[in-house]
Length: 106
Image (tube, rainbow, N blue to C red):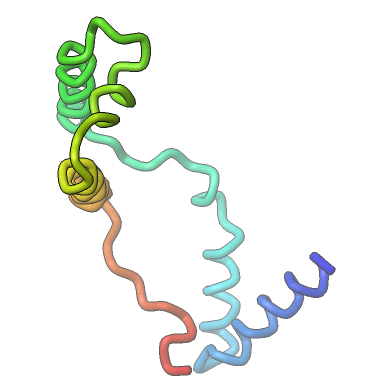
């Protein structure tokens, strides 16, 4: 079943590509070693994240699971605000450029 899925996905690349050359370059990008390489992480990003988690742990330093306990007794609005801030950090600190989805026209 997995082999059928993989072959179907590869065939879709040829179906969507404008030229056969474009399809092969897309496949080359899919199976290149960039899948296994580490993303570029700036030292300032790491420092900011470490400082943020140290502050959270310091606030809840008397509990065994500080971050969990810290937000356990908070209203739902506070919890979801924290989640949104985390998502915003992920979006801001990811160095990804927008890429066109291969099947966006369908």
